[in-house]
Image (cartoon, rainbow, N blue to C red; front, side, top):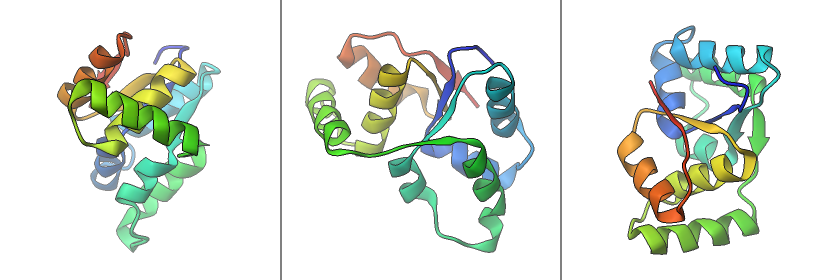
Length: 130
């Protein structure tokens, strides 16, 4: 993966549940080995986490990643971005805001919605599709 780092969206965590050592895990490991961050927005974790035994791979991935808090500043920026894009998914907006703030690519299974948000922000956000 690139030295720019990665930020994970909800689809990346869902993917890990079914494929623990697959592409998501490998991309995060590669980013870390290159000295780049692997980031997990707390709002993404909240959308996925149910603490079930089948989420053990998510817990393992979570330990690899640095948390990105859903702060009041992020919430306001996400709301402004949603207004610009004419969309409503707060989690996707928070992921795009995190990618812009940290200069990361987004590891996603949903490039359409994230791309629309990045376009509305007027910023190129690399999307890595799983």
